[in-house]
Image (cartoon, rainbow, N blue to C red; front, side, top):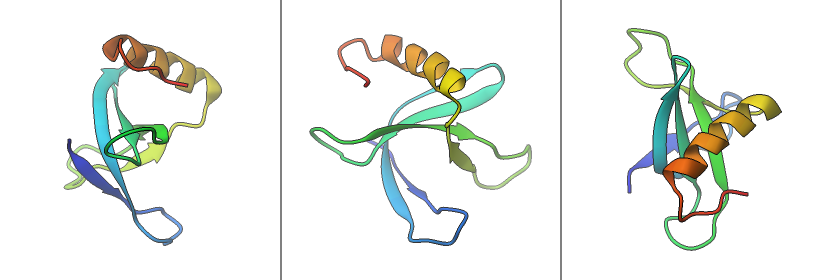
Length: 85
């Protein structure tokens, strides 16, 4: 499983996440990540906000209820055997 480092914009300590799945919706890339490689962990949906030509991807947590609902529905279909709550 791919592992990525998320460095919060406020300069607080970096957090490592495991990428479960990725998709592209409406011209935006999204990733579904978890904080645990195995077992029950917290899952988060992050949106790629980097600009064309950026060397590294920049992601932010999806916090809009409408966007979160739409994207989580797509991830649920992609991961049929996994419950996303």
